[in-house]
Image (cartoon, rainbow over all chains, first blue to last red):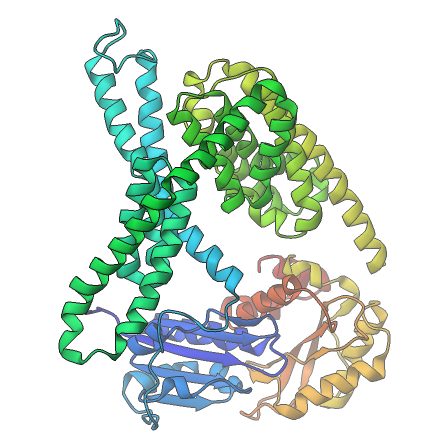
Length: 468
Length: 149
């Protein structure tokens, strides 16, 4: 790849890692900026290693500056021009260091060039790996759901049967919208499975995952089937690639475009076909159980949905509730989604309201971030709450759960319908009873905000005591 | 966590009297002690000297950033001292050191504090910031300058 500006990398670090690490970082960045050079600086400070250089960074750079008074892995820079110096020089002589690299004056570091060994970084825990794969599927799937869901919801403005030529609500444009929306929504499970597979074993996993996902979609295995297809495809292909790595080089091309796709698609396809019956039965039971719950005990359902939505703010548990909502929307159940949306909108609003009402308990930065959370809440972006909750998840997640549950419970009790899977308050015109829905969400948010405010107050008080 | 929260009027002195590195360090440690930042002066000074022994923290521009991490620190803080006459703080260039930031961090202080200190350190590299500091005549002004970080 051709790049206009030159790229260099640097490592800074000092034994205590409190001051000089970052001064050297800043000085080097400034020196590079002056010369219109792109730079990435890995800081090895007391907070740990930040901004870590990747194999790709090192590959791409024209030289390395190591201004570090503590040990850092030097092997990774083999074959590059490397300047090694103290962190003090990194601060004081940043200009000269950058210039020396640009002039090609630094010695090339000897030794065998270490190549990045592969896809998997060995020491990440299995749980984190699985989470990463799952989220890769979810984040690639979401845009399809959002675009498709909202287009479908808009078509309902012409009436719920506006797509049906037999109905007197029929409108050509609405029918087209619903068709586009439905197609995008239909891609949800295949894309989800494909990108789980892709996250595990790149293209081979993506192919088998995609086909498995299509089968899950068409046989009614749904989301659960998609998870199965994605992971099975990903790990199967990882295994196949390993198994076939002994084949002579001449078969390389044949292997990747013929053998692996053929075998993996056949095996995953068979797996999905055989499991379709039981999984779709499971799906139906779950959906009808949830749909039934919404009539028999809206309070319990609200509690479950509220807790799930506020459990991980956009993570898999939240998405499980969310995807169930969209599945039910596809089946024409608009009640369930109303509670999910309410529960997803609530956490950012809790933050926003708490930082407004309990101004004194928050710093200026937090209040500014709080204002942003109004917008994030109004547009159904639960993730806005994460930076706040991350400060003390054990206490704050239950607070968010409480607020979200209240919003969801009221929504279910009032039997409000929301036909769109996303959009927050932007889709209010589509909501069956917009005013009550907003009120429900605000009540939940205020409850949460009061709890949050009380917590923050006692937290501040306790900290002052410790200090004084 | 804001950088300014690490400073207080009690730990700023624009009139250090010391004539050598050791005396200046004593004065700065004293500021931290009076500002109720550390329990034990001797222990903290030891940490500061250990760090200096590794390599000087006087990095030029007349500024030094001695720092110590120790359980004797009650809460993370920064003392700021200005010594008009200047002392030899071991800067490689041989120039005298006039401005001293002494950083105190507890053994298990949170990343937020460390990040605030990192922020301050980055700022010191910039000339505008240093010039503004040098122009301060009273501790209150120093706090104002710190607020811009």
